[in-house]
Length: 116
Image (cartoon, rainbow, N blue to C red):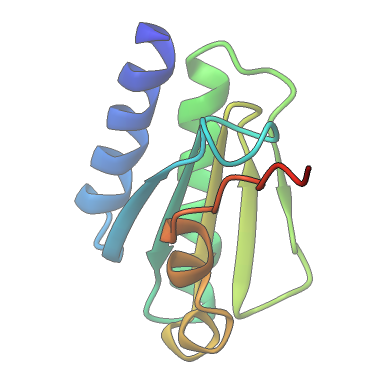
């Protein structure tokens, strides 16, 4: 778990250094089995979004996550970098506002009620 936390910190620092905007980290551990954390950030242009996704992918691979990859290669408004235990979304601000992933994943998921 410490490895994931340090990798999350590296990814957030990489996004920040490279001028990503509105970086948010969401803990998924009690919400989904697909990953431990989701990181969402915005880029200022299609070129910026592409560059951010490539830099994040490089950091993941440097950290030993060899199976990581970029989804949405043909999209100019959104990229998803699959870091196995980390999912990184990089959006154009308008698309990010449209999908509202922070709102979806930040809300508490109600526990199922037992029906007797």
